[in-house]
Image: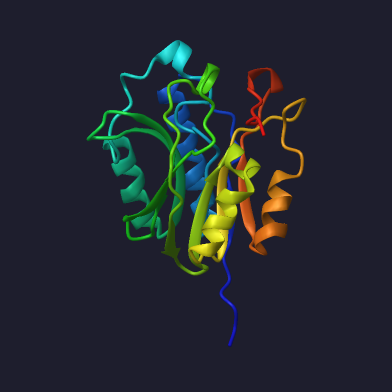
Length: 219
């Protein structure tokens, strides 16, 4: 029996912190281009809509429960182009009002198949606005089966990826905004694959290093 084939687009973009309109235009163009090139899955970097260090310039009042009107447009696009989109976007919990750094998985039929709230969110500085997530979730996404998601420094804690494996994940997907340097990634993604035996697809942001904020939780 032939194994399923899948073309994956990694949108290694450099969103401008706080520039929602510009970043949304950049994402729309990149997603459209990826779909036209035959991508079946499209993965965005961490906080692709807002930029990583958005809170100082934009604040947080704009963050809404998801899907908001813009994400609804992304869902309709996924249906038209028959693609799956892993979209990193802040969200407001409709019950508690707490804010989360979240990645959403949108299926080719427009459903929100799953989401993941960043667990290793920094409690100071650029992520002080975000409440750390507490759970790992696994969900089906054709054609590769059960998917588990991470965000950036979640790869630092082996227990997170191992929890996804225990719950039946067959592949891992991570959005990231993790710069090189003193506290940059140092084998964490590779360790995830070694520990779990699962493939890990990472879409890290790009652009001038001066705009990046390095992160790594304390052990």
